[in-house]
Length: 113
Image (cartoon, rainbow, N blue to C red; front, side, top):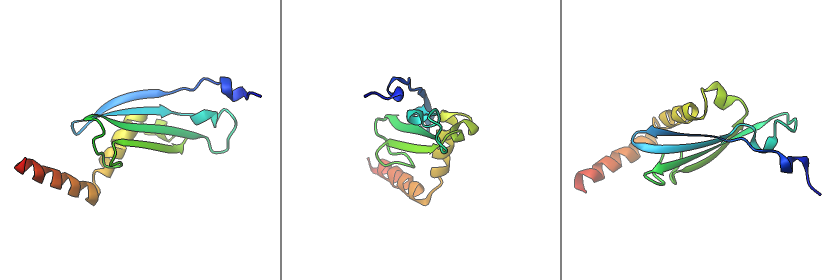
């Protein structure tokens, strides 16, 4: 038996941005798996963030260069779209003591590299 959702076309938005010399790819599905179309009380959106160049570069919100993130529908749009949302998230996360410590250690290694 098939569901009417099996035939539903999924909609993705993609973008790339340069953040501190790292090319970041963003894939965004504003209505993840049709949650809003099915009448969910809390429709869900989905973001995938990848460090493209350098591949798998550490980012302030992921040590692996990849992050999957679910959030309420409309939040990304309210922030100006996927690229603007991710740039704001990166900028905010880069203020953390852990990120600053990692950046300082990386610069220190460059002095001796």
